[in-house]
Amino acid sequence: MREEKGKSLVALPVDYVVVDTETTGLSSGRSHIIELSALRVRNGEVTEVFSSLIRPPKQEICEFGEVRYAYADSFITGLTGITNEMLEDAPGPEEILPKAHAFLEDRVLLGHNVQFDVNFLYDAFEQWLGRPLRNDFLDTLRLSRKLLPELPHHRLSDLAAALGVRYEGAHRAEADCRITHGCYLKLRELALERFSEEEFIRLFPRKKMEYRARDIGTDRKNFDETHPLYGKRVAFAGELSIPRKEAMQLVADAGGVNCDSVGSRTDYLVVGSTALPAKENAVPLQKGRGMAVLTEQAFFRLVRNREEGLP
Image (cartoon, rainbow, N blue to C red; front, side):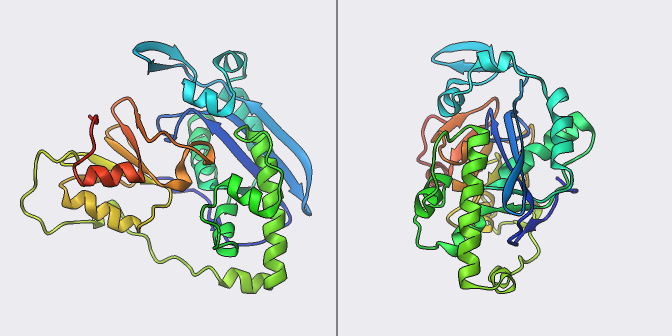
């Protein structure tokens, strides 16, 4: 658990730091940051820029029937344009993360689906700096859903198109920071056209106390031990189309074990639309070392015991 993690804010600040990361995968426990960018903003204007590739540890990658050791697989390279050759020459986290920590200071962090970036940074800071990321953060995804409920999707590309923000160079961290910043300025302007800042904040009710995996039980006494979820440890990330508590109940009713976060023994990680890699795309089914990453749709098929080709 990230016990010292900052708070998710609802606010319309003019001073903040926009952040974005590119990573080798979805789980900060198993994946690594390969690019980190941040824009320091004062009174709505970008005043300083921090951006760097970060060389991660090499990992065993199995693709097209071949096993090799590399920094990133072909999916990540295709998505971001960041090649293994670029990462070979990049500085390591021990060099970059102290500089990033100094740049971020204790400022509010802003990003699109920023929980994804904050979680990676929290874990990386703990590992390499011996202290977690404690900054509070503000999510443009959350603002978009409130101000533009008519949008069918709230991906960064959808938001930029709706607000007339240029969407160029996406899936590289600095470009995503600049796109996100442009979208935030438009969202802030839209919010203040309709409401005062205090009225806007009141549109977001405070969340009730969260439940934990141990709180989800089942009344079932007998289980189908051939069901693919029976005895499996399942974690969730991102926002699902149904309440997470209901999804966790499906796991419990199948005889599975719910987990609050990804660990070394996790069998399945189910990701909602807000936790897809690089904010936009996801592999429908991605097998990891001992863990399968599933989209929400694949998870529901698995619950119905019709998924094929899974461990």
